[in-house]
Amino acid sequence: MFISRECDYAFRIIRALTSAKRLSIQHICDAECIPHAYAYKIIKKLADAELVKVFRGVKGGYELSCDPDKATLYDVYHAIEGDLFLNDCQKPDSICPMRDAEEPCHVHKALWGLQEQIVTLMNQQTIRSIL
Image (tube, rainbow, N blue to C red; front, side, top):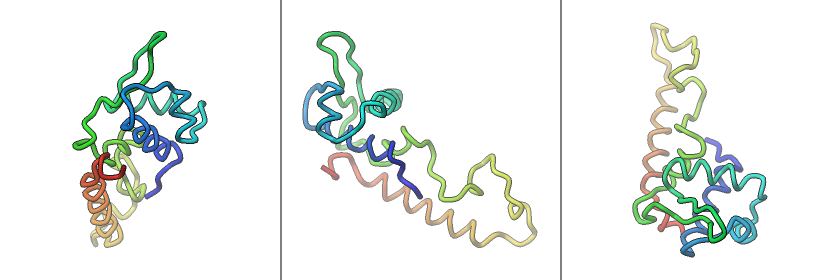
């Protein structure tokens, strides 16, 4: 599993927004050391996932729109990266020569088990629990 820079920044944006009612992009970027070029794109994804609310205009800014006691690390990860796959062969649209083999692929099975455990652990960690 690989947590991308974009996903790391998303976790930091969420962290910043739990500390205040409404924040500007400038405040979020300064507080969390996030380049502006990334922030807007990430906030758009977080807003599409209904984790962040966007307010436009002079008194605009950003607020957390999810309950930090219920939203999880996986919710944030999924908003940025989509479904988690430890290996390309686990993706539904991937081409794996072992998929239709007579003998089941034990590597695939092992990775699938690990992947399920990681998703479960990420779903157990609420946003509040990491603050």
